[in-house]
Image 1: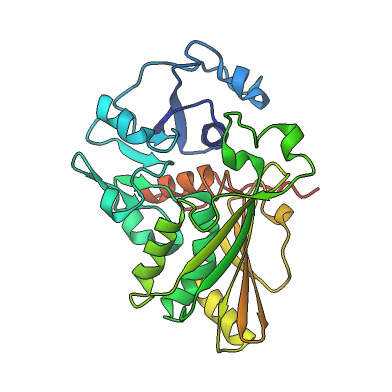
Image 2 (image 1 turned 45 degrees about the vertical axis):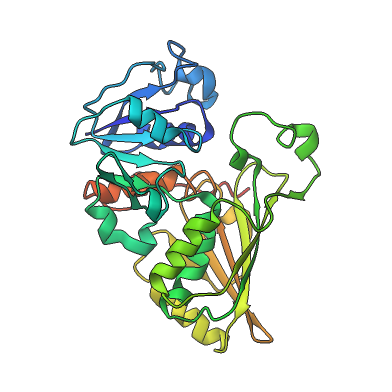
Length: 325
């Protein structure tokens, strides 16, 4: 059994990881680290686990675990790894943004690989350290990679994407209170969202001559989880050619699928799937890409990466049922 350690165990992504690991046939939860909750039962925080998990949070680490998941706030993974040492054989998967960009991928002799399986499966399989992609970045990149791979992004890409309230984490702020979110809608970080760096990086990895802009408008929705992203750009081919391009690119992907029908979020919530739909109108290709922000956008993708790193079938422990009704 793969021995798993989780750092920063009280948040949403850690909670999802715990749920996935305790139901994973090849992995075992070794410890869940949380200084603020040390000594408390995990089920006191993640209350759906009452009767399922009797483990307590700890403020000590086991440096010999097989894989370590970092579920810390952005910028805190570097601090944690600077102050804590692990075995040379311990694989690390960081769910933050500390190591996603080329300029940041090497840390204390460890080289972090960008962990988008649909982009570089074989590289992930050989990696010891993974920078797990961001949630918006995952949905948007999966919408763009087939075009970039064919060298067909010739003009600006316009993106409008909505995320659920869990995307903001568990810390309270003015825009996360129920009375603010309920029956409300707003944008934030227009054209400057932090995920743009990794999105541009992956597009240029596949299409070296890409020199247009990716114009991204992130929005807050009044639902708990999921990301609904719409992207459009110029496309000279037919809709049939676009569909053939996307279906060929994702023909071996375990979790990304092209749908002939228009999409809605309940198709992916509580799954590790990304669903994509294409529509052509007056020379513009409209791409819809939807995911669960906590699963394919975070913890599910992290377990998908773990499976690849340990030579397991990619879908192991991730055959999840959508919350459809």
